[in-house]
Length: 138
Image: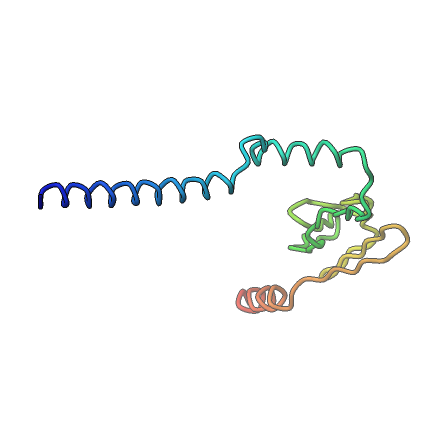
């Protein structure tokens, strides 16, 4: 008799656990609609839907940033005057980035671009080194 009662209790417990499991599976099935398309398909649909419509945001025009003109060195002699600007050798009348070299002295270079004057000069450190080298030769 004890054996029948324990078997009966075991069957009732197993059945109640089975119904509990079916209930949680039913809740999980309720959360996901089997007819709903996957997320990547929804994203493609939204992109196609809004593709032909104008947006209110304006695209910014980004100009490429150029390094400023830098006077590196000046080779100055009576018969030849050369400026080295941005690693290019220039004589009076040559152009770099739309600017024309119009005047060259021992320490400065003057350029003109679209009517604006650009004055470039050598760093004081470079001229100081040059002066020391010349004085030490004496």
